[in-house]
Image (tube, rainbow over all chains, first blue to last red; front, side, top):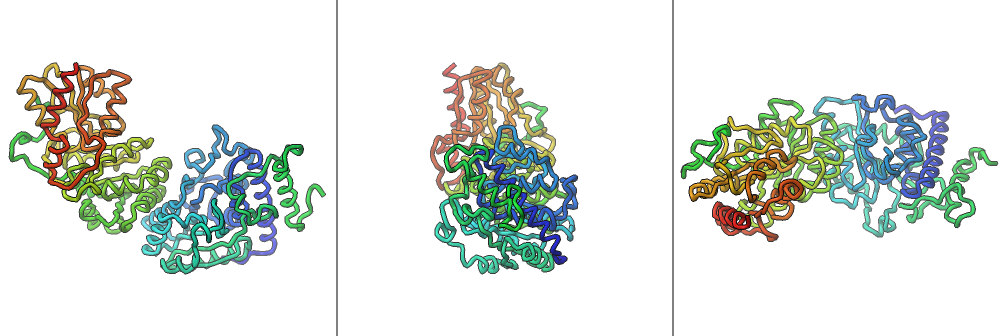
Length: 297
Length: 329
């Protein structure tokens, strides 16, 4: 995998920031949906859609494309925003999230939005589907394409996840790259309190996977890990991406209460405190931690 | 009398009628489907021999995937293979698939509209000695309630082969309900089979009661028809092999011309073939109905014929139900 130049990194950072802003705006407008996970995974989605994936938004059914399966469908705000930014559908559609008749269903549905590889929401079965897609590649002797499966740490509570992990190890599916959003939270609290996952890397290793741990907000780390995944034969790879849930918005970071809650509406300054949340979040994101001049400064 | 155009087994009413397990027809159909289309793949959850997936696995080892005892994975991996352009058949016992993996079938296969074929062997009470844990008598209910999923319960080994081949070509997610033990061969190679088209196998003149059956009990229904007809109670027997989509045209005709209806299945009364027929008739040609089915209880160990008799699913039970239905008209 080619080294990431500084300019590319800057491009990705700015793109990820745009994606985070669009997520906040979309969720605030909709008034329902998940916030923490989408913000935490924005960097990974950005580098996938704007650097790593072999894809063509003009031809979503291009047979030569890499496959991307989002297993934890509830973080679909980041999927929808990133796909729109990549050119799969108009950004103007984003504000229809979760509304009656919208293609952007509360959890992704591939019939409503055909450029998706699969529908998801119920946890634990996305990796199985990615295994099936990898097996289809092998049957068709397609050797230069990859299947990415994005999953949450919480869904590793599901037995179905481990059934898939076991089969991928048995079948030595080296074209399969799982990326686990290791953000340590799930709906009821911290993962290690709800149902401990550690030692997580050892568990995957024991199932005959190559395991790479990265900082999920470091583009170079992620890029190198995917390069290493592609270089190894005879084993699938899991990238355990340590992420900060709610990343980019200080009052949302690491607070599991933001797992399933949207910020309050943007345009309602006079309402209760909650309604100022989206505005504050956007103010923080526009400056990218002070590194980008805010448009409101 | 038997309908000649159905080309049924000429030895149907002989004591020496040939018998074969319905699951054997699936095994043969799977090989034939694999020969006809290289996209056909088979997956199994550690029951390759008893689900009759073995012949396919030997003939097409590259297209056979052993997932181990993991039925949820079985269903969802098949969804991924279908997304990759394959035509997957997944096999286990009906109790485990579609029993244990119902949500994966609903979401990853049906909601996703991936035409995966789900073969559930060892369905019905006639599984016998294995007992209630292994006797799937709720599977029609849990499959027919899922949008898009076709539900087929072949009546014998020949029909199972045809249903398997038809499922491979259908382009829709399909559940094939199979049985373990040898049962009489009702149809022949030449008998008609089209998904969604019920076959009227027996029709007396001016039938008083329409019997609608599926699976191996179609044979019991025909035995009952022969006796009833001889006693002067005219009936018809329809093999409703496809429970979904329902053949509304044939049901309207055969139920419309009778004054009562009896449904017959190796399944719970709630949610099965009888429910499907009742739901339809209630809005079209309502008739007094009796249900030959298991009534809200679990199965148990025993020989298949003992169990059919105990739960009143045999020809004697059907005759009793027909007379009761007739008495209500």
